[in-house]
Every structure is written in C-alpha cells, then in structure tokens.
Length: 392
Image 1: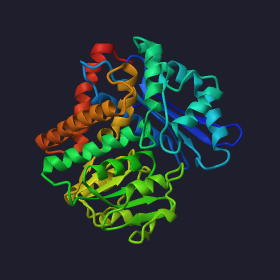
Image 2: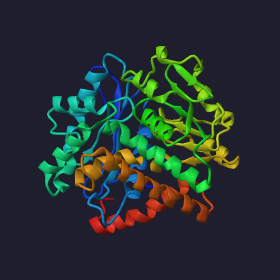
Image 3: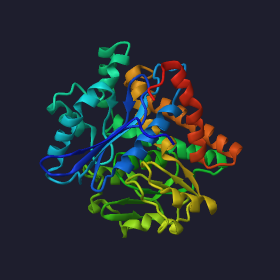
Image 4: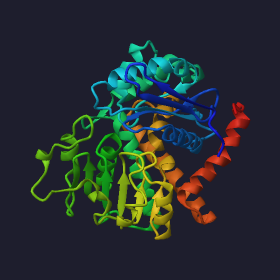
C-alpha cells in the first residue's frame, strides 16, 4: 500500500485537542471523504478511512456515467460530539482546513456529525460549501447545486432522503449476498449495531424486504425480540444521536447489555456504528453467517481472519456503505434527479451489481470479498489515471 498524498495533524489552540486530514489520492485534482468526530480518533484511523474512500470511489467507476469518481480523503476530530465544546472545535477545525476544502477536499457528515451541523459550521467560517472543490468539474454548477439541495429536501415517511439512501445501499448489498447463496428472506434474522442514520435506515429497508430484525443496539444497550422488533416505532423514538427512547418498547422487547447484539441468534449482523467494534476478543461470540459492514472499519483485520476461517462471510465497508457517497455524486453530476424512487432504484441496481461483481471475483480468486473489492479497485485506478492524469 502506498503512502497517502498528504497527511496532517492540527492542534486546537484553545482546547489542545487534535484534528486530522488525510488525502490518500486525487483524481481530477479532487478527493472525497467525510469528516468524523469521536473521542479517541487517531491519525491511523483517518488514514485507513481515506484509503477506503479511494477504493469506494474506484469501485463506482463507470466510463458511461456523468459521475466520474474522485480521489479518497478523510477528516477526523478527536472529541466527543456531545461535548459542549464540540461545535466550537468543529468551527475552528474547518477554519484551519479551509484552504484544502476550497481547493481539493470535498467533505460532509460522518460518524458523530450531521450534514446540517457541517453546513452550519462551514458557513460560519466563510466556505461556500463543504463540497465546493468539486464545483469546477460540473457542467452546470447552478443546476447541479439546486438538484442536490432539492434532493436533500426530499422526505420519505418523515425521514430525509439523504439519511435513507445509504441504508438502502447496505440493505441491497446484504440482499444480493443472500440471494446469491439461495437463502430465503422470510425467516432470515438480523441484528444491527447502531440506530443512527446508517443503522436505522438499513434496519428499515431490510424489514421492508421481508427479513426480521431481532436486535438493535445503541449507546444504552441492546434491544432484542426473537419474534422481531417494530423498527418503524423504534426509528420514530430516536434522538438526534440515534438513541432509542425505551418508552417505545413493546411488552415482548427485552433490554440486554450493549454487546449482546454480537451473540443473538441471527443470520446477519450489521455493525453500523463505530470502527473496531468486532475484534479478536469478541469475534468468537458471533454465530451469524454474514457480517455486513455498514460502518467504516468495524471488523479489525485479525478478527476478520478468524471469522473467515470458521465460515463467516464479511461483506466489506468499501462496498457495502459506498452508496451514500455515490448518491451525492450521482445527484450532483446529474445521473439521477431529486426523486426518492429514482434514487432508491439507481442505488439498488448499482449496489447489487457491485456486490455481485465482488462476490464473483472472490469466488474466482478463492479470496475474501474484501480482497476481491480491493483487487477490482486496483484494476480501475490505472484507468482513472490514464484518463485524467496522475497526481501521485
């Protein structure tokens, strides 16, 4: 693996806390990757996420599409987003990173931050937008910006399209794997860690596809019901951080410890919260057949090796959760419009095709899905460099 193009550490002069930016690769002079805020965020974590963004972008390369993938990047701030000082820290970080955001880093919400909060802080430091570096690549900037704004204004059952489309992609990846294995949807049980944007939307789409979500976990613990949870009721009872109000639980719902989601009787596990959730110390509690990485880097490599050895398939984050990022660009560049049905249909087609491609490559190579995804990306990166030039 090559070193990133740029890696820097920023120290806040008021709190002494640190923030990081890693540009893994530029394509057409621009890199894409969100900004996360969590206590304990590290430079190595951000570098791994940036490399993952390079892979995600390359996996979605379609020479016939208007959207042409960008490079990969990531930002991170070492702070609990619930800390009263968090917003001021975010503003100062964006002010320090303003030259990079203006020139070549397009960013947005990630773990611990919402897009509304990023937009508010970006405006406060004088940025036109958190994705303004991509504007020079657009054929019609005004129309593209209006289309994306209209898309973010779309709601489905009271939930924003921007919050739902990523979960739609995660669910379709899981469904593609189940369908490929000949597993019926009815009777297939799912446990989801995290009820925020990604986890909540994934649970919603899997339930609507006929699967049974038997457990969800948030910061308060795990909620379980072997007969199935009322996902719509739990989604309606969430706060801004994805924590479910326990008053919404039904008589058959049980409250269990936080890590109980790992060992519940389920065929599919969806870690959709923090990185490094599955490690060598807890992986042996998992009895599921599939792990679907809705979060970024939730399974550490050593744990994945142990899981693979005992027949558990890990569908990697670089495939599974790439739909969120791609939806932004499909919309901005004009491959789809500001319409929920069109967005969901395009996301489903794209994510199913990508998942099928990666699983077929893994079967042909005798490798894991993660290795296959990286192999596909490595095949495509030279094509991007040949077409648009190399910045490395």
